[in-house]
Length: 455
Image 1 (tube, one colour):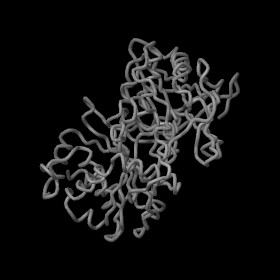
Image 2 (tube, helix red, strand yellow):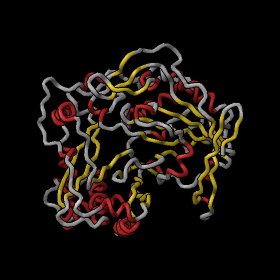
Image 3 (tube, one colour):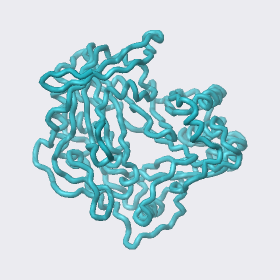
Image 4 (cartoon, helix red, strand yellow):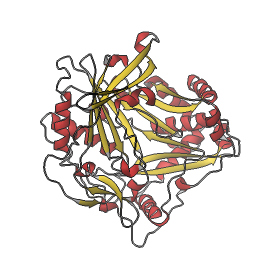
């Protein structure tokens, strides 16, 4: 429904099952106003083309997240004004976010720093915030009402680097929904930006001012490709996995690994192991190995089907010299492991742990600079065929963001960007549990759940 007022307003609605109300269906309606004036930096900022490194080029996808705020001491009456004003102030430091993506003379993504501004939308929901339901699993149909998508964009160049929406709820709470282009920052950079925005809103100086010069990650001249870089390898889908996703509905579920379950998993991960030094492993190694192996079994991959694991490693401390504090571009590089599905599923879990460990060990200054040069020469994108891509948010401090209403009561992603992506999120008391979010065809999800219950 579209209602004419001073601004155009659009009512978005979605039905959801509410976990807080014994399975009752709640109909979320959000009255979304048309974007008013764009939010520009408060004072003049540098103009011209802003260089994006080759680590930025490969991940020009929109990441959509929400932050739910509710304070007993403070209502939501001035939430829009406070957050909008602070955005204008923080954009002075993060000025490329007020520009627009374009293509450089070299044929790469770059930012034209035009001071055009960030798209900012006000919205109102017809319910209380605790009626949103369970946001620990991605739900684009429902949670998508809480972010602003540029629906008529024909390509990524027509989508602003950042859009923001503040949705007020009847209970006095509000949700900040953000759409941010991954080519502008990785998880650490995005976290520092949102936390800086909150600090400005509270009248505080920035704890970590951004370091903006990305030319420190320019490709070498001449380029030197010194590694195999199998992250780009296209694997044949012998097992017809894509057709399974087409035939069956995709289910999204969240699996909570509490400290006790993580302890059991790490014990299982080191059984029958001759290769794991000290007979121990990290939580990430055990969890990644389990999810890769369990997903491969769940999708019933053929024994000789190659399967690839991809995950990002933070290279900030691994570069020589280290990247400066506050570097807000992508400082991550994808590492990989490839093996046959039969090997992965028939050998003990410790075998998969060893593969994950080797993939981590592979990431050195030389490997990362080789990856930068590989893109310079090939312009290739990592392939996701027969692949699991793990994204880890469990160490990111999004839960510490504070605009003056305290830390978020809930925060998380709106959707998983691709069917091959699995997300690790910290959860629970002292954030010692990890939620694993993934999407699988219905039959495969049942098998995955059985393996989870057997830990």
